[in-house]
Length: 140
Image 1: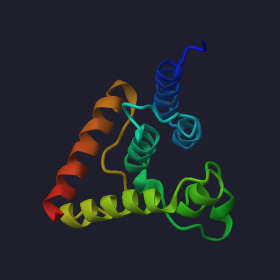
Image 2: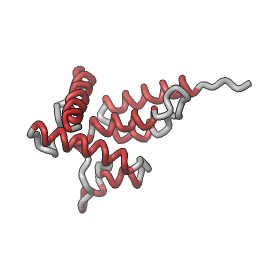
Image 3: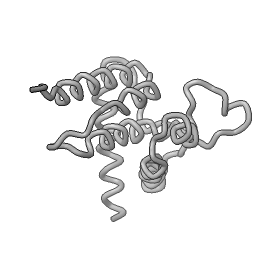
């Protein structure tokens, strides 16, 4: 019979997306994550991975206006929905969590939560995500 290698394929896909994101290519990482296949043990793996990237880059998402609508990478929620076909509910949820975080911490919405550069980028992203989750849990 045919061997199911979806676990290996998903791991490779997620590792490649992680590398892209660490290089600042978060939009391309989203495209790669669209190829994650549902697994019996993790049917929402694709959704969780995409929401993770969206959450880490929610500060970059803003409505398209004029010439900005033609920039690369596309950074508006509309671009993610129209171009990549990411469900609007996922984009909206991640943006709302980030906005709630900004309200609770007094941070400006347009600014990133932390500067993520150099070898500490992965740690900074994890800390930023942890802070956002903690802030969101306080609103529940």
